[in-house]
Each structure stands twice: as structure tokens, then as C-alpha cells.
Length: 211
Ligand code: ATP
Image (cartoon, rainbow, N blue to C red; front, side, top):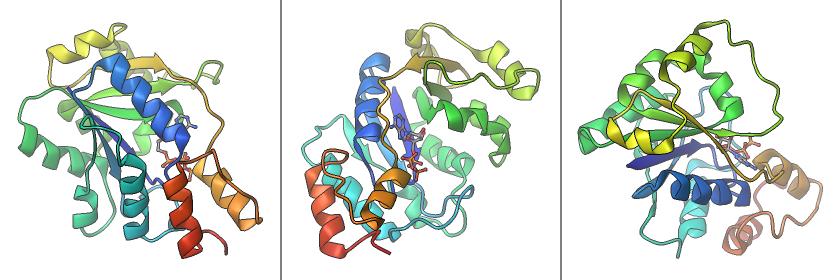
């Protein structure tokens, strides 16, 4: 099974890397691909240029091993980066292989605001990285209905079909966010140990996030 970990990665940090490892082991993914979006549809412009975010990801994944990869397909496309288009293009490549989209629980609650969100289930499973103690949303809407129809307790069962199921898994919570790192740098602080050293070296060399 292939896992897709999407995000802005502005910059990539240990919160991403640790959860990616845990999800990969839990779901026994053959490969986990980090998929940076070029133009996030839901938020303001990233602080670093697309090519700089890509380079930071490359640096973070150096030596991570063959089970991790970087997928650049959203950078080759014009316009906003819609996940549904991304998964359609991935499907052409992998045919019927089980595919799992990995999202944080906060992103999952926002799913009905994603472009053509219902089609995502035709294309992939969704693995939700759960944050224990996080307030539950109102499940009376359509997302709740989708969840009731598609939820599976056992991650192994995702391997039995190309997509269409929803699985929750708990991951270690590291209170690290890219926003926090950008703010820290802006305020003149040192973000060391929140992200890989080669990524930090590049941020310092290029003077990223200072203004
Ligand atoms: P920002 O602070 O700029 O919003 P972020 O740190 O949340 O960025 P994104 O690139 O937006 O990072 O996130 C990509 C994915 O990584 C999302 O699904 C998000 O839930 C998850 N994620 C980010 N930080 C963590 C963390 N510390 N622990 C677990 N998951 C995380």
C-alpha cells in the first residue's frame, strides 16, 4: 500500500517526520510519499518559495531510506493544488494498488470544504492521525454519515481494496508546527531540534522566514 502525506511543509519539521514514520509502520506502507502542495487552496501564500520548500523536503528525506519519497506532481500543475486532481493523476500511475491519504484530524474535520471531496473516497482510503482528547466535531452532517459507512477499526483491512475506507490511528503528539517555527525565526529565536539540522542550515543560509 502506498501512503500520501500532503502538506505545505513550510518548513518540514519533526512533527511531520515522526508521524510519517508511525503511520508507515502501523499501516505497513511499502512507501510513504510526502506530497507538498504548490498553492494551498485553503490558506495564505507560504513563507518560502515552492522550490525552497521542495529542497527542504529533499534535505529532510536524505538518508530516510527507500520507503520514503517525495512526490512533485503538484508543482508541475498550474492553478490551485486540489487533492482530487492529484489522486486522479496518481491513480493513472498505480492502477488498482491500495492507496491511503494521510491527514491530521483537524484536516479531516474540514474535509467537506475540499474541492469535490466525495470523489476522494473513490480514489483512496483516508487514514486520520488522531489527536487524543481533541474535541469531536458535530457528526450529524454528511462527514459523519461517510464516517459511519466507511470506518474500519483494523488498519490491515485497508489493504483489501484500492480505497474507500476511513481509519483512525493515534500518533505521538509533538507540539511542533510550521507556524510556530516561522514565528520563532521571525522573533530571532533558534528552532534547532524542532526540525532536521540540514533543513535549519538551509533556512539560515537563505535567510528564510526572517521577515
Ligand atoms: P502550519 O503551521 O503552517 O499550518 P503544519 O506544521 O500544520 O503547518 P502542514 O504542512 O500544514 O504543517 O501539515 C501537513 C500535515 O501534517 C497535516 O495533516 C497536519 O495535521 C500534520 N501535522 C503537522 N504538524 C504535526 C504534528 N506536530 N503532529 C502531527 N501531525 C502534524
